[in-house]
Image (cartoon, rainbow, N blue to C red; front, side, top):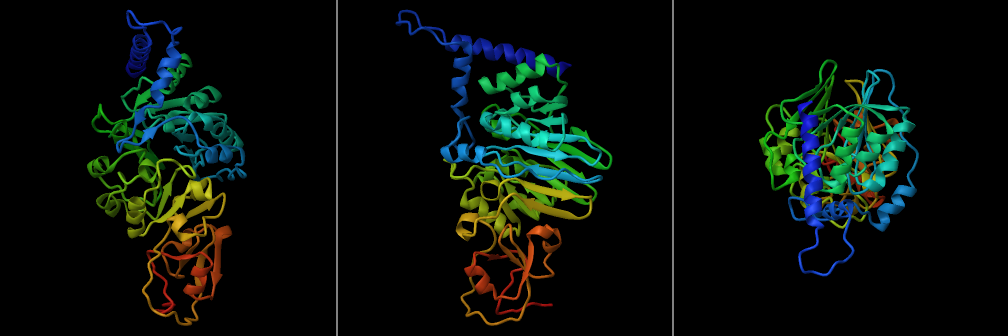
Length: 412
């Protein structure tokens, strides 16, 4: 209840700030006046990320097209299965998680224009209640659709960092939490969200940064059996370096849409992700993902999957095995996909007589004994006895972990 009262106070302060902002200075000509909502809304477009990149609630032409041309929704989770759906929501984040006990969780809700898509995706999976909602931080590309989500479903509880923003997006979300009397809890390091067969705890924020909302991102570690998922929000390298405890994970939701300010070398050495999911919009104006972040992710051996290239990414696990599904095919141009090790050893290829395992979604070539092979979804798995050079001509790239090579042959 204390946190709910705090939201009420913050909401009042935001509205008062908006009233002062839209007051006409003495002696100046009247322009008709702006409403409180208009004044607060204007501040949405001036939110700034840690590297000076603006965060707004508008979408590009390409992203608008993406909303209307979404492909079929993923299949619901089976009994005893945990399914994590990294939704294709343009230049924003939204992750819907089906828990093995039949409950569910939503982390973020992208920008406002994707509210309908998020609601429809959840309903398509046959849910009318969201048990746990996490709003990682107040930026519009993470909570833009949250007001619509909160009004569309019965909500068990929402977790937010103890920060606010004087924006229409944040005010709308806070008003909805209060009007619908949704239980609200602080998301901060040390808070346990789930315990038992599935465990979820917040690793950040541990301190509040009044100057940079990205550094207030709620970072969540989710574990089921032997499989672990790490959700970074927009946390940058300074937050990554401050995370305490074991952060080894199978699947990493890459921080800040693949910005150069996140996914540091030291962090990746600790996390050692098998899969790195980047949520970003096609042709976005920020240039996400940045080549510096992609290079670091490739160097750590992670398989990179981007929502701008493959659509919604679904990772399923029974606590032991791990499968990955995508809505579409990864771009066949290696420079576009940002996936895999594209370096060449300069040697003339030889016939190896090897059989390679292919991931037809990420366009990766693997040795049969590669650690990633077992996690390839059956529908995305194929075998080929072509040379690596021939497969590269078709748009495939060698796995950065097992490094298949024509000159070395297949160890099996």
